[in-house]
Image (spheres, rainbow, N blue to C red):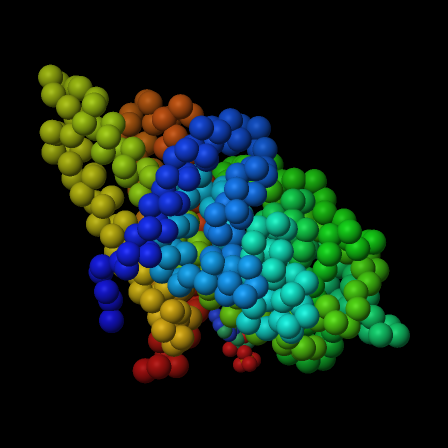
Length: 382
Ligand code: CAA
């Protein structure tokens, strides 16, 4: 099932992403981590290169690529800056994918085209102050009023929250039906009553913006319902299955970045009269880091390959995210140890990588949620 040789196109995408990350993203990464500045120009350039709608069909302004190419690009971008990685991941996996899969031709024309080409940015509003892992318990409500839907509530932890233009908002439209009474609405940022709050001051991925969003009497036409009344939870879950591949690739990028920096440092750093790469204590660390990364990479590429083959990848995406996020945290932590005191300061990047890595065990389903998803799928199949 696994083909370890990437196609020419896949290699070209990886190379383009790698070059772009080195030339355009790397120079400002430390300063943006300090200032929390959103990388607006970088995202615009990524849109021009086709990275913001990688899997969307060219008919709607996308690049028409497969999920494996997406993973390769995501890894290269996140290797340099995981903040840019998550901005890209949310737009590609959680917003464009849902619009392309469930949208009407009119919705795709109006919203998908601008999102996939990078002219506009998207956000995915599922989480709430009291509905994170327990996503079926939506408190945000929407009621029907003379041809329109009126949304009221509060969303939390929204990636691209202040910078996006178009938001997918999940709301309860029929409480009695529980999760089958959740509906997804497409909301323009300038709709009256739609108010992003202040940016969160985060441990990591500081150059991406995360905020809560208050919705008070936000009124949208019926034509802004994505996929039909009551299908919102299905859309959220299916979008998150793909999203988890994106976050696995982001985590893989962080781990690979920390590993490469560790290898390079260990060859340059002299201790006890030789490069520390010649010390067995360091060699064992590098070997362990590499095994964790390769195992996570195989799971991630497998999940992406299944997605490309249009067969179920629910379990595999959860496995990939679980393994890659764990690898990212462990590898980044060990990278600091390899660097010694230098690893503890900003200039050497690996301390940021550890801070960035932690969120991959939390968003788009915590590691605990991934365990639940994997176990349920296993038990269903056996
Ligand atoms: N794929 C497809 N369908 C799924 C699914 C999946 N991975 N997980 C659950 N479902 C379906 C179930 O099959 C069920 O459908 P039916 O009723 O038609 O049978 C329905 O969803 C409800 O599922 P459960 O009965 O299992 O509900 P539950 O409450 O016991 O568990 C859950 C649901 C798996 C815990 C789910 O709430 C979940 O995944 N929670 C995590 C939410 C999450 O990942 N949030 C991330 C926020 S977004 C974010 O981080 C974005 C960002 O900005 C970076």
